[in-house]
Structure formats: C-alpha cells, structure tokens
Picture (cartoon, rainbow, N blue to C red):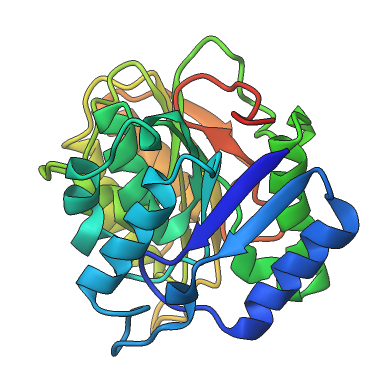
Length: 276
C-alpha cells in the first residue's frame, strides 16, 4: 500500500475535489490510501491559506512517517513563496517520500531535487479527478504508485537524468536558491495560456541561462491566446530556433503539459514509485 497525503502549497481545492479523489482511490485503487489535509480548503486571497498555513500543512505531510508520498492537490501560483522554508524544515521521514505535481509545483519539485530530498515527480494532480478525462490522468499517477510504468513519458531511457517543468516556472527559477544543477539533464518544458511572443521571450531567457544540458524536449503548448498579429513561428519552431542559437540539442516532443495525456517524469532517472 502507498499511503498518500495531499496538501496544497499554492491554491485551494474544494471538498468536491477531495471527495472525487477519495472515491476514485477507494473504488479503483484499494491498494492505496489518501488523506486530504484540511488546509487544502483554506482561502487567503489567491492562496490556499496564508504562507504559514501552507508551509505548516506541507511539513505536516512531508515530515509524518506514516505517509509514503505527498501529492500536491493543485497548481496555481504560490508554492515558490514557501519552498525554501519548507526544505530547511524537512526531516528524515521527508527524505524517504515521493512528491508528485507539476505546473506551479515545479518550484517545490526543483527545491526538493536540489536538496536531494525524496523523489520529485512531474505528474498530474488530484484536482483533475472530477472530470472523466482528468480522472484518466489521475489514474496514470495512481498506477505508477502501484509500480506500473506505462504512464511514464515514452522518451525516458533510464540512462540520462531528466526533469520536466512549466516553461515560465523554469524561467523564474533561474538565479534563485531553488534551481538544481541541470547539467547533463534532458529538460522537458510545457506551457499553457501564454502568447507565442511570451513563449519566445521565455526561451530567450532560458537559452542564455541554462547550463550545458543534454537536450530539450517540448511538451504541449496549449490554450495560446489570440494576439493582434500572428507571431510567425509555431511553439516548436520557437524552441528549435533558440536551441540552435544556444547549441542545445533539440530532441523533439514530449507528452507532458496541461492536457489529459500529461505523462509522468520522475526527476533524475525513471524508477518505480517509492512505497509501492
């Protein structure tokens, strides 16, 4: 059994979201258990509680030895505000856990990876369990917790360390105490709800700041807003342009992103879930 604690380091979910993930696990994955921290329903402006409330809940889940994994409930901006403080307060139990999320949770995954705490994993989150397409993305993670690797990103070769980030999140991590050393890694990026000129701007920043990575893969770039003029390049052409300029090998596409087909990417080398 994998004992999973769910908390919300950024934005809140509703009791209906919690009921949906609890029901899915009970009905289809009885080998696992989930506990939803009450903090997930807190609200404080944009956030799921103020910074101290979110930090305390994260540490409740991470530092409690009765749980094998911490599953971040939802993205949305905010986890960067508590990530450094959380890392400084994590104990030995926290170092044995798996941590799953993506999008804004990239701040937490990066901080964990840099500190060598547990197994950070890019994967879909419990908030998606209310819709049928979203449930399949959530099932993919739950199967992985059971040791089923069919939901892993297909390009993972088990030989080259890999990370996956939302593009703007990765760009914001540069020159902060949260960014791990990505030298020699395959870096996968995805984006949602950004103009293509903003995607280009982000690649400009990253192409000038990333270390010598092993290559870059582009995930989904979706829900692109309409602009008053065409940008003139697709998202893939943008990625190829800046990779060529920076001497970064462009390795093609990855099945990650804000879509129902979002695949799982363990940071480092792909391996079965801990606690399975």
